[in-house]
Length: 313
Ligand SMILES: [Zn+2]
Ligand SMILES: [Zn+2]
Image (cartoon, rainbow, N blue to C red; front, side, top):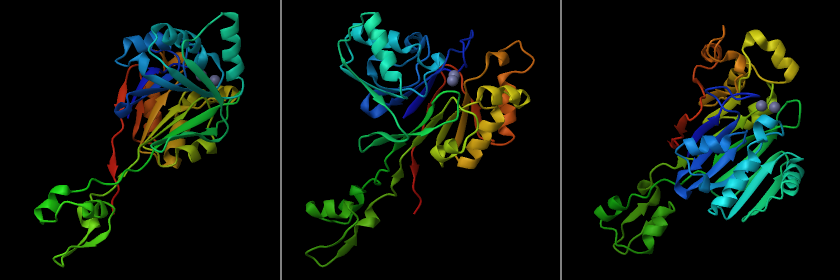
């Protein structure tokens, strides 16, 4: 499970930051899930190590242009490449009509099946291994945050230990694996739990943008491994954050602290903090770290791998 930031600027692109998009690479199944798709996202994909042909699902937070204007170009290119066989899109009400209108007026014919799902708070997608839920955020238009949760995995069965103890191969191995107590013909008994390593907890990622500070973001992000939260403004520009229903870096850090996440990535920075200005994104980081020390700045093409943790018993 690996995230790559493809765009980290709010509203308009700058020289070093494109508009919003984050790719989640599910390494083992060779799939990429995109979160938001601002204009130019397909160019960012081409410049990254990611393969566009692996995109399987796209989740949209809200209908503002800096989060969706890259969709049609990317969907069309996926069709021309002929490497995509199906695609699922998830997003707020209106996404389905937006896609339908663009397809109709540009006479766009896709060579794969495109399904558009209108999301509501709660479960959006689940397949046993991963589930995606969404929660309402507080922005000028309907906006949703997404939580991607991986299921816990049972710990590895220590087959070498069982062999060393002379336990004969057979169905008893399956029973030990399930943590059961077995009795062999020679009278010896073993507890399966002594052969299983601690289970591994599923990883979790939460993506909250665009929004001003809100309790639903805290609920959605509760104890997540990684929270990606917008930080459009610095605290000294909090007036603008309140007017436009965006977050300050302080608000993002407060959400991370209240939700007890492991790591916070700040993103969706206003171009007013681009290099050359009095206040810079590094100042937004300092501001966040004063409240939530494990805060980092997102930047375009930054890749971060989420690691597994053993559940202590
Ligand atoms: Zn935005
Ligand atoms: Zn917005």
